[in-house]
Amino acid sequence: MTGWLDVPRGWLEAFGEIARFGSRVAGLVYSGRVLKFFGESLRQAGILILGSAVIIWAFVFILGLQCGVIGAYFNRSIGAPSLAGLFSAYCDLREGLPYAFGYILSAKVGTGIVAELGAMRISDEIDALEVMGIEPVTFLAATRLLGAWIAIPFLYLVGVAVAYLASYIAVVDQIGDVSSGGYLLIFWTYQDFVDVVFSLAKGMVMTTIIVLVGCYYGYTASGGPVGVGTATAKSMVVNIIMVHIVGMLGTLVFYGANPRAPIGG
Amino acid sequence: MAAQAVARVLLPARSFFEQTGEMMILTARTLVSAVRPPYPYGEELVGQFLFVLKLSWFPMTISTFALCLGAPGLQAAGILSLFGNLDRLGGFFVVTAVRFIGPIVTAAVVAGVAGTAITADLGARKIREELDALQVLGVDPIKNLVVPRFLALIVITGLLDIFAVVFGMSAGIAAELLYRQPLGGFFATLFANALITDLAASVAMCSMFGAIIAVVCCYKGMTASGGPAGVGRAVNQAVVIAFMGVFAFLYLFTTVLLASNPELQSIR
Image (cartoon, rainbow over all chains, first blue to last red; front, side, top):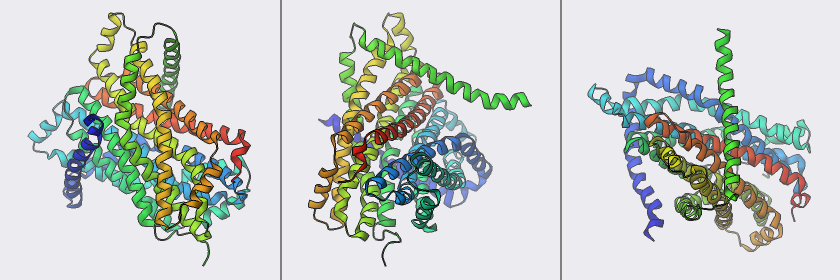
């Protein structure tokens, strides 16, 4: 019986450790001590853009297509095919995009950080850094967090555009119940700039958590080559749960009391 | 210079096609050795089934509940409350929770939790040369390691989808209660719109997700190389490829399903 509760208990224990490590890293970034390694931060941002941008956008594109198809058929079923833009606007910007972004970011960037830092820890490179007088948490974790904060907002906003394009293709070109102008009228009516800011806020909170979780599991990896693989797998569990919880809390806080829809008075 | 640029573009494309081809070969060999006697993988199959269930049940319940409470629950309830027809949320949940969110959360959890564990496990065995040792002993790694994981993931992903749908529906109930609505209308539209086709398609789709995840993760684990960084990198690549493959398949399957089943295209 205890075996079945191992996962939640281990997760709760890890949660406290991650919170302590994460607040330490975030403190290093906020206090500006990371600026000593600003070049390294820019390099991490560049690695993020070159290595992950295409995969993130491809994933978001597929999500946009899926939202478009589901929305077009749903609106056909309620007898209002011209309102497909409503579903697309909500599914793309408000809900789908943060989740899709969180999934692919935890898969590509989160596990990537664990694999990289874990390999450094196993081959004693992190201890070597400490011996050389370079604070390893600042140099390895805080620079990655700052790099993500520099690069991710732009990746996210381009991702919004990619998802919009995909939904347009799915609704107007693939299903074809509604004309281009009719789709775009409804689509732009049901969103405004504040929605973009809310969506970006969700995405950035997820990004911060994913990078911190990745740094924690990489930094504390142990047990040889096998340990790195296990730590990578563990980080994915925490990331998946945290992405969903952040998404739900974001919706609850931003839209729980006010649907923000141009309906009624 | 030009040759370098061409190589930079073509090399990833080439390795992409090579790896896709090798995964296809692995799929075919897995299928063949799954049906061809003898069947030595029974014990490992049960073990893997319980292993995946043990790892996945907790992230699964929390994730589905959270996603369904946020996205189709509160967001759609907000719009519907403006129209004053919150009882229609039940019908909307059939469209979203069963067709879309149940399968993607199941796939994300199984790929992220169980798939990564499988890749880490097989990758560790590859790095420690246990797979080669098995082959020397005359034990076929595909029959004894890949086939049980493949079959276990196919079954468990389909079954977990049903739990995902159940927890998604309970999130819908929570959303209705947050808006202080009686639940009669929710259940009425839910059962009026729920069709066997929807649920069967959802479970079938998830079983296919399980097959995709199993093949990708086993392939990446069995081809891990390069010392300590190798296993971590294999897990990283496996989960990215599994997510991309699952979402691409989801889009194709949904398109075909909705276009070929007109009875799904009306709300009752």
